[in-house]
Image 1 (cartoon, rainbow, N blue to C red):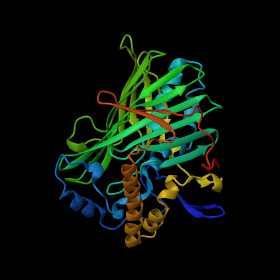
Image 2 (cartoon, one colour):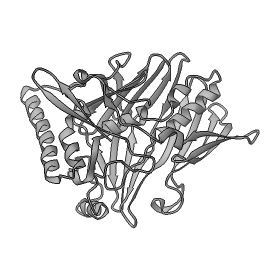
Image 3 (cartoon, rainbow, N blue to C red):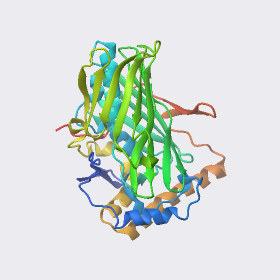
Image 4 (tube, rainbow, N blue to C red):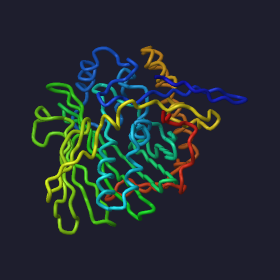
Length: 390
């Protein structure tokens, strides 16, 4: 489904293009992919040397699908079939809250398509969407290197999310592994608990058989309740995932102080994940992808006047429409127009000796700690774009 909202005013009219998230199987209700993508992407990387900076690799629109990375990050939080985030705050038992956080963390993993990538967000690009009482705001706080910040709050549930993500793709000849650096925080404010976690990496296998999947280790810890989880995504021992399930997840929940394992986790993030109590042997399903990732709906424009010019769905509207109609020449022109505008703004800042400052986040960087960000406002306001609940 494509939603084209109108931002109207006395002097301008802007189309906003929003599309439904990919299904758990990577399907879409729009066929926007160019033919022979596997051959095209393999051919593209033949001219790239191992160790090259892929963040500066300019992908033709043939390799894009119609949304920005900011939108994809936001969708992992606000596009969800059941409200797993609210459940994290509901249990009075600290262990139940922790397992709910683990299940919610698994729910943020979404499918990726081989040969198709979202747009690289421009500097200062934003994405602002609400789902019920959860308000989500993202901003691209750096372009080179690409760093995205997310702030989400739910005043009713007393929940806050703060993410700062820096993607570092590494080309190894037969595959590309994108390391997702940065810290993710989930704060249960009324409980006084902060859960810190990282993200798995995205692996794109070019040879011998093209594929793309999530891989690596994720650690979730909460200093206030003394619990932590260790999760591993993808096959543990196989050459580039040639054996085993690409979508498997295994792990454990243990006490931080004693390292005693309380629960063992096993399953697949696109199906179900079970938790086994180490003492009793009892097993329960803590995550069901069919309930969480089925029937996801596209956001809609609820307040046209409130949509900012920096909104992802507005910045890339012409390119998205051209890709969905498979007008590749128009798509090329639209993408070049956005990029040239950014080059003009950069030249203007350099001529004035000006430094770009994020609108919604304070940003810091250190070689040891990497990128970090803190929101400039306590609560994210309701957004002009909303996710339908029914």
